[in-house]
Length: 262
Image (cartoon, rainbow, N blue to C red):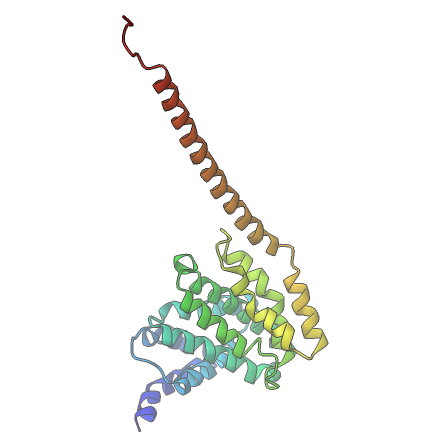
């Protein structure tokens, strides 16, 4: 009974988000931001129901600029979620909805959903990059969501088309978000490496290989090497200065006035 009563308030959102009237959809999306901004946990079912409505909100959207703006707004909903549990649950529900509905998206609508996925990959990196990627637990749990759904090698319910797209844009969006190259690169690449190891589909392993060989990834490695060299240089300068000071003190001792001889 508790689960049913918890899910009930989201029902109006589902109908309004999928309305053919854009004004009704816009109002529902605005109200949803407020609804999501709560500490109380949402159940997985609540979030899946909400994402069903959001999926059809995008479905009903026409004109490229309107679609792109909506995709960015839907990704921006992550900013409204104030608890880690709700944030990760919302992202998980997004990916499960995309996987479930991917095969039903016709060619005329595919571009806007490809852009929505791109927005979510980017926003996900942006959220976990806050405070300089310092929340290691959040980074780990977010990457686990990616491993479990869009980059899951063994789950036959995940469409390869969705996998391909996420692989193709993974480094692109990391490159845009992590401009100072402070991300824990090896950890961020873990879902891709795991997919490449576990997949038995040659096109998937090929795309993973191409992504992992992206020339831009050298930027993170070079940045880390440069930081290490700077640290070594600073250490060396400090050591040199210390030795110079000591040598100067020795010279002063050697030249100290001992008084006149008898």
